[in-house]
Length: 110
Image (cartoon, rainbow, N blue to C red; front, side, top):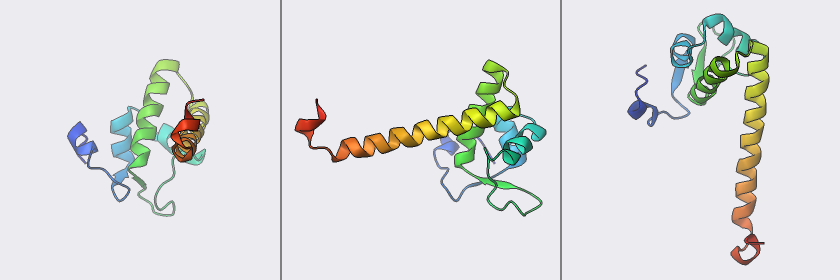
């Protein structure tokens, strides 16, 4: 898979990425990625398959994990926790945005 920025814009939920491609994108080695799968931070599309593939949203997660590892020297367990917490923050921000969109404009400026 080509990982140029222009190509990344075309990724969607049907795009599949191999473990090796995630390693190349993130700078993390295979064993660290496997540990992230073990901890539940990354979920293969078909965990029972010998050759794991991942949905495109995992690309964002592993790039973030690679930056966290580089910047803070986190071990795989701490990376999994950080990814989980960042995911929860994103979900809460998305939910808040959704709620704010439902509030009439005159009340939204309080």
